Length: 113
Length: 113
Image (cartoon, rainbow over all chains, first blue to last red):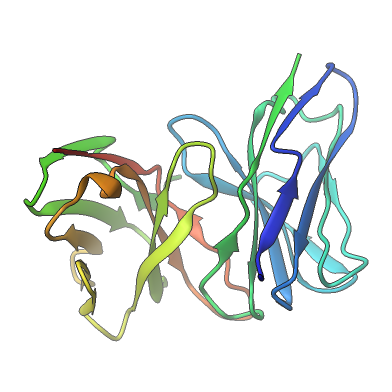
């Protein structure tokens, strides 16, 4: 059963701590993305990766870091430099670069206390 | 600078009637448009899309219309069902080597039984 998994569903961290959000896909998709959703706002792109070992900053990359060591995995680290980390984080993938349709995971709700 | 706008934060419709969700964009370079449906605390699911070379695309109860001269697209759902109640996001892409999606802020559709 192919899809995108994100874990955990809910995550709580203390202010000043780094936290890593997991994203795994078994769709054999080349491209992967991280978005952030805040109340009343659309999804905003944090980072994206078109192929393994390569990634680019999106519109709101400050305070975040990513890695793409394996095709199926694209973890996102929310660092202490991110000023407003509490949000709903969504991971997505698409078949290949240039292909428009993206498939989304279930999301992780991060709350920083 | 919001390139994709959904000016109606919410819409309420009676079951069986037509739901019309609207989306405006400012970037004339966009060449592909998508609609996603999202339930609370879940990832968005792809609904329907349209290329800029078309002005209409239909899939069952869902039809998307594109008016390039007005930079406007709309999603029609007919007949509306209570299960359609969700947040609907429109997204736009200008293709090329990357397929970054630019999302609108979403419209909450409530279908009343």
